[in-house]
Image (cartoon, rainbow, N blue to C red; front, top):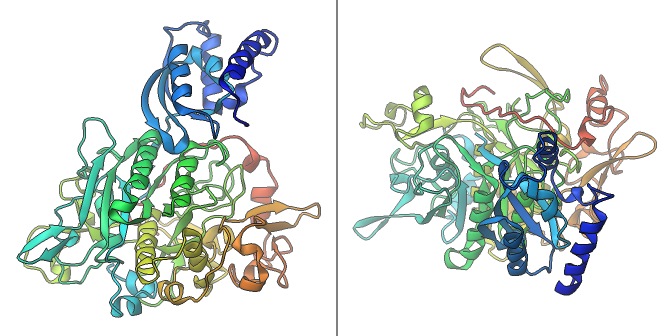
Length: 572
C-alpha cells in the first residue's frame, strides 16, 4: 500500500470507522485467519466490545515507507501494549485485547496482523564430508576461517572443546557472541539441539581426535538463542534474532544464518512476518539456510507428505534443505531420501521447494550433556570407545532431521564464501542448485524401524535440484546476475504443471543455465519447462502425485493442520 500522509490517514480512519457500520469486516483481510477466528469467537461470547476480554500477542507489520514510531504510537493510543520493536519487518510485537483487533486493522498504515506463533526445532558416523564431496575443499586448507555463521536455535554449549581454538597457550571459544531472546533465560543450550547444529557447521573434532569434524571447522559461531528447554519459541523471538544478526553482520562478518526450525504455513510468504524477516537478511547480504521440515510422513491433508514444507522454508529467497540418508557410507550410490523430509510445493504459494538436499539421517555431532534431548534419548549418545577415547563421558550424540541437513549446507556455504567472499547470496544459492548432483534414482522404498514402508518418488518437490556437492559449487566459474528466487509451479489449461521462474531471476536466462541443467533431465520434457504431467516426474506407472496435489483443493486452502514429525528415534 502506498504511504499516506498523517493527516490523510486520520481522516481515512474516521471514514473507515463510519463505513464499518455497514461493512463490519471490510478490513479483515489485514488479520490472519487465526485472528479472524478469535474475533468471531469473542463476538459469539458477547465480548466483541469488551476491552477487558481475552488478550493475544500479535505481530503488527506496517506498510513499507510508513513511519514506525508513529504507527507504534497510534497502536498505544488505541489501547495496545507494545512489547518489542522489530524494525526488520517495520513492525513490532504487541499485546492486545481480541476485541481491539478489528479497530487496529482499520489503520491504513497497517499491512498485516498475525499471532506470535510458536516455533519448534526441526530435528556419522562422520560420512558427511565424503558424501557431500567436501574432502578436496578441506584438503586445500579451506575451513570457514573468518566467516561468521549465526545459529538461531536453542543455544550453543560455547565451552565444548570442539568449538574452541588454541590461541597461544589458551583455548578460546569460537562462539564469539551469545544472546538469548527468551525472557529469563541465558544463551546456554538447555534443549541440546543448537549445540548439535553448531557442531555440524563448525565442530573441529578436537575431542575425537578429528574423527568427528564439522563442515567448516574454523568458522565463527554467533549464538542467538530463541528456543526454550523444550525446543519451543515464538515468531517474535526469531525475528528479533534475525534483526540482531543483521546488526552484527559487519562486527563478526556474519555471512550465513542457519535456521533449523520452523512452523506451519498460515498465509502467503508475502504476508508472513517470519518470511519478511528472512528476506531482509538476504537483502542485507546474508545467506539464509532453512530446514524444510520433518513432515514428509504426514498424510493428514491426504497429500502423502506433499505441501508440508514449513515456514520460513516456504520463502523463495532462502535456501531450503531436505534430508537424505547416506546409509553410513562415503559413497553416494546407495543414498536415499528420508521418508520424513518435508516436500513441496509450498502451501498457498506453490513455490518449488526444497531447493536441494543434504545428509540428515543419523548424524553424529556435539552433545550438550544433561540437556532435554540428552535426558530423553540417552541411547543416542555416542560411546567414547567409538572414537577411541579413554573418557567415560560422552561428547557426541546422533540426531536426524532436516535440521541437520540445513546445518551441513550452512557449513558448506561458509567454505564457499571463504574461497570467494564476494559472492552474493543469490550467486551462492544458484551455484549450489546448479552443481547439486542429479545422480539419484527415480523411486525408492525405505523401511523404518517399526516396519512401516514409504515409497518415495524423486521429483523436484522431494529432492529439489539434487544432492549437495560442495566441491562442485566452490569450484564453479558461474557468476550469474539476478535473483535466485525459487520458481513456482503453475498448472496450464491442458493440465500440465509448469516451472515458472521470476522474469528477473537467474533461472530465466537459458544462455547461462541451459534447458535442464539445474533440475536435471527428469524434471523436463525435451528441454521444456513442463515438470509435471505426461508421467514426466512421476514415472510411467502412476500419476498419483498429480492427483494428490492438483486434483484437490487442499493445497489451495488457507491453512493446514500442524504436526511435528521429528525423527529422534533415527528412523529413515
